[in-house]
Length: 332
Ligand code: TRP
Ligand code: SF4
Image (cartoon, rainbow, N blue to C red; front, top):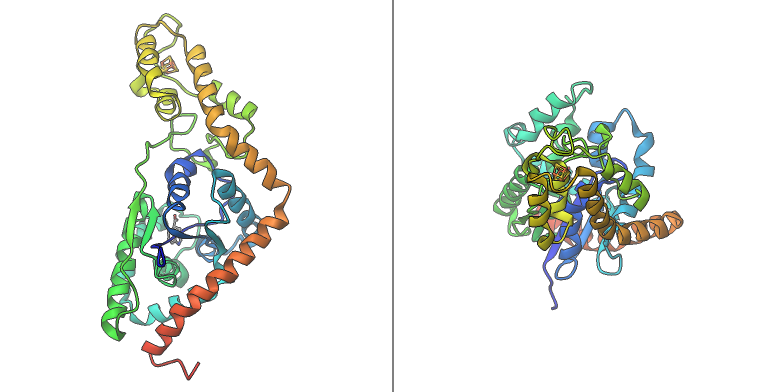
């Protein structure tokens, strides 16, 4: 394979990751490492679009996110791990794209108004926040990535990326492939209280949780609220613990658990004890890898710096072509 297809994806450094990130993204990334040339970026500039008043956490969070990637099975021998701001070509390409993208393309991206509404405590009437998806387009196109693994919420951003690639190619000549989004088909994993899993709700199972912590979170997890007493039959369809069983417990055990629940043959505590075992089996290798990287933070940072250096060489190749096509290369 002389020209393997290239993949780029990124995450903002917002802190430690939870199980939702593994199922929603990282498992897919780990899988893609086998067949693609993957570049994964901790996108610190993207974090600034909403956290510009609160920059203290960003650099620490960059390393936390990278450790969680490694814990989830991202292999730095196979994939290139970068910090966005260490590859300034992302910013240069973003600037050049800003010359050719009509404002309405950015204003109509659905996440723009939604996020502004959701994060009302923050002043997001900034230039940088409007440009968020264009910076994302630059992340992807600076490596001429062919595929981008993302969650459903990101589809409009990938569509915009394709439109920007087309517009550039039309104006200056063919440089960029149009990247495909690769959707992660995820069973949506709720938080332990049945709401959306989110660190801010304190209902998440974190990758850094020990098997013991995972176990106690699972045992406290919400169940079918209508099942009050042991002899009440339950309904697995409305039980967050059963959603977890579907993901983590071997398929052949599920009918028995389901039947046990509906007939009150099994109690919630016993049901969740089975789940604890399934989850610990899943989490153990993740936890082990996390423990081992945790003590080697400076190595993790070195790895990101080295990855960024390698990625920069690829980004430079693209930018040389871009500058030439736009007649701003001055013999470089
Ligand atoms: N916007 C993405 C998110 O919030 C993060 C991101 C930034 C990204 N640049 C990217 C994802 C490039 C894929 C490709 O999840
Ligand atoms: Fe949920 Fe299991 Fe209790 Fe049924 S028995 S309500 S599936 S925890």
